[in-house]
Image (cartoon, rainbow, N blue to C red; front, side):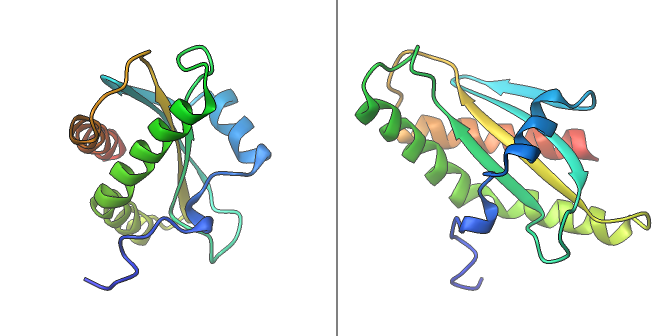
Length: 140
């Protein structure tokens, strides 16, 4: 395992307005939920050859947590859980791209927090593992 594997680089973050609109306006998108998280995801054609195979965004609604400090804490928990568990999903997508002759695909994912309560990090990590496993199953 290389030391760079467990990072969450800028290239992995879903920041492009165009890609976000594709994700939420896309007819082929899928959604899976494991309390307290929901993931909305879709595969899109890679825009650049050197872009990441998985791009992620995290959303915590102001409706659930009024104070920014609480929203930021939850987003930090979600990012950390994803960072530690992303390897299998990335390798599955890379294998799928290697077998796919008609072009490279990027998986775009939005993780959305669904509850008003703070949840401990261990439970968030367990939910993230299950979410990523379900996404992987839907991709195959």
